[in-house]
Image (cartoon, rainbow, N blue to C red; front, top):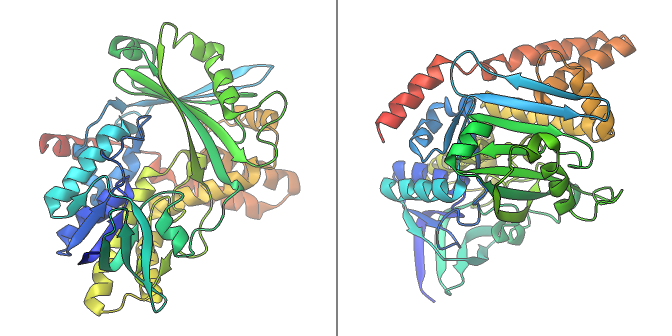
Length: 434
């Protein structure tokens, strides 16, 4: 078997992988990006959205140059109970909320950006094992029999990455650590998507359409992506629900949705797993886990791409520091990687929202959750729940510390609820540079 040595090898060309490869190459490291698919993103046809508040981060400005399907300016949140339907509509006075993209287009573009920066890219190459010597990760072995060595391996290969599992960092996952999602693409054509959905995304909370998750509808150029699912515990399938496909069918049958997709054609219907818990360890000697492999994404909130991009970039920067210091120990990698991660206010605020809501919402039945959301008067969604729940609980229990915590968090997240002229100017500049 042939042996080749690099400074950095990145496994996986989803979100974290190309971001890590691009940054590593820009830092002058000999970089290799490996991807098992023939085309990056070919298994991610459902697509998603990029959070504009996060893209204001200078490290992510370049992503605004990527292929965009729709510029999202509104968000609708529906809370549906037997008694009533409540809809929150959020429309910033200026700026964009999200950029709607297709992963099959975006991942391919992003990987090409890494190649342009100087990274070597190998597609249709599957990692089947790791090279481990003296308790350190020294490289990977591919399905072609190649032994590829590097000073640092960056694992960006997703929820069930063989690198993280072989290294003993990714444990067996089950129950409320895992969410099983079903996603459906409904083709309507650009004209009907524009007429019926416009430049808005939609969230829904209704009986029998999900299990402790937040169903969504994201319009693309000519298709609309719907998604729902639930945690893999004993309560996922009950009360007439035999699979997550039943949740999806019930979602599509909601009158508010059924009318909007009338005449449309289902273009794809697929399942996927997402991990919703932080890992105990994200590093070993010579190895850093990023994105979903490292448990950094937040599927409970529909957040993941930004977390993957940033942790990929931070892993590359950490690798460069480690190689320069001639210290690729787990301790060195962990210290510097987490210094970047914990220093990002956006990432920390969304992790707080996720942890708080997961704890509170998993303890309540759907009807109670929807009713509580309907009574929120400062805006819809999970951010409001994190604030409103503590306010009400503090008032009920005469505990001002809970009220103060809610107030402090409300003030903390304000910069990320105000996406204004700054983001628009950056976006226009980046698009002009394409």
